[in-house]
Image 1: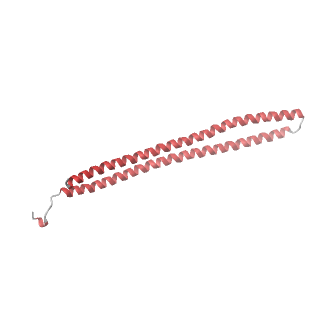
Image 2: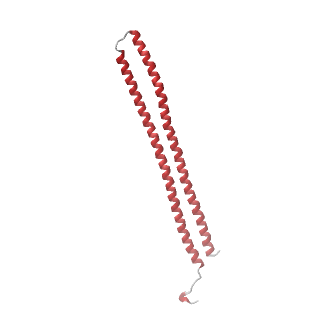
Image 3: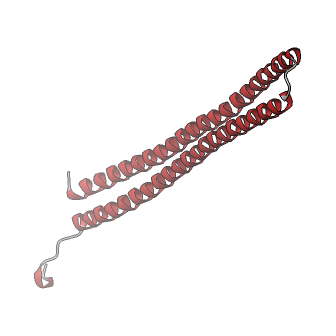
Length: 167
């Protein structure tokens, strides 16, 4: 093999390996973004689960509270106890306060899950952008290497000259 053939083969191999590297980096970025979107969707579903669980618990707690108040009122009425209205009001306030605290905690849980989903999506987009930048860098390095190999090819195919211009 002559020097020119080696230089041409080297340029071809460099072009192919550069293209494969670029493709791989782009695919890795796409995969990172897809994985991030999947993980973010899981966090969003967890946020919905918190909401649904709180809604279900709220209905159950409300039912239990009404049943408990009814029992207390019946017991107080049958015993002839006085001052039940004050106890009843305090019980209602306590129940409502507990319900508000539970609602607040559920809201915070939902907010945290949604924030995590947003963060995960952003991270996926950043990884995708980085892979594009890396692919561009690889492409430019490949072009630079190809130019160097083309210079080698040129040198290998030049006719040798003699010193002083005498052939």
